[in-house]
Image (tube, rainbow, N blue to C red):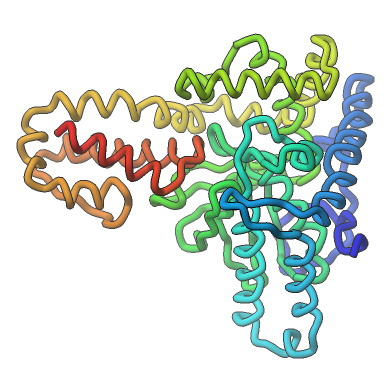
Length: 394
C-alpha cells in the first residue's frame, strides 16, 4: 500500500474544497532568495525526503510495540479505515456521518501513536525504527503526514502542525468544518470548534483557545502553514539542540526535569549525535535551517502574547508556593480536599472560595499544571499522584 502514503498537496489554506491542486510556494514565499535561502531549501528537501518520507513508509509497515507490550502495524489500521472511506455506502452518508468516521480515523491513529513509548530524541520516523519510540514533534509529524498523505481518500479538509510553548501537536479540520485539537503524543483529540479563534498571519495559522481545559491546556497554538516546512523546522531545531544537550546544556523546558531524567536525556542526545555524526559545524547548519524555515514562527514566539505562555509555564512553581503560604486559603480548603482534587484534576470546572484574588490564583495554578502535564507528557495516573502528594501537604 505504498501509494497510499505518497505525499499530497501541502497547501494548508482554509477552503471549502479539499483536493484543489495548489503549487507549494518556496519556504516563507520570498520573491527573491539569496544563496543561504537556496541552500536551506535544498537541505530542507533532503531532510524531508531522507528523514521523514522514506522512513515513514518503512515505519508504517513495521511492527511496533506499545508501552504495555502490545503489537500493531500502523499501515494495517490506516488502510482498513481508508477502505471504508472508498465504499459507496460512505459516499452516500450525510456530511455529519462522514465527519464522524473521519473523527474515528483520527482518534484511532492518535491512540496508536500515543501508545508508543516516549523518548526525547526519537525525533523522526528514522529514529522510531531504531527505538520504537517518539517524542512530541515526531508524533505530530507522523500524524500530520499520515493525514496529509491520505487526504484525497479520507476527505479531511486540513491538517496543521502547531507549536504551542514547549510542545508540538496538530489541528485538524473535518469535512463538516469542525476543528479538532489533536495531541498525538498525549492521546488527546478534542473538538474545539466553539472554543477557538483562528487568524491567518503571513505564513502562519494561529489558533487561540478561548477557555483552556484539562485536555486542551494551551492558550495559543501557532503553526507554519505548510506541513513540510513545519516538520523540517522542528526536526532541524531538535538536531541542533541535541548538540547542546549532549554537552549538558538544557533548554528551559528540559531544565525542569528531575536530575536522573536529565541524565537519561543527555545520554540520548549523545546517542543521536553519534548516529547523525553531528559535528558542531553541522549542528550550526541545522540551527540556521530551522531559523530560515521557521522565521515567521520564531518571530511570533517573541511577541508578548506568546511569551505569556512561557510565563504560565513558569508560574506553576511560584503559584504553588503562594498557595501553600496562604493561611486563609489553606484554612478554607482543608475540609474540601476531595472537591479541590477534582477541580485540580479537571473533573469539575469550578471551585468557589470567598477571596476573589486568591480564587484567581487557584485557577491560574490549575491552568499552569495542566499545561505542564501536556508538555512533560505525564500520564493521568502520574498527574493525579502529584495532585495527591500536594494535597497531603495541606
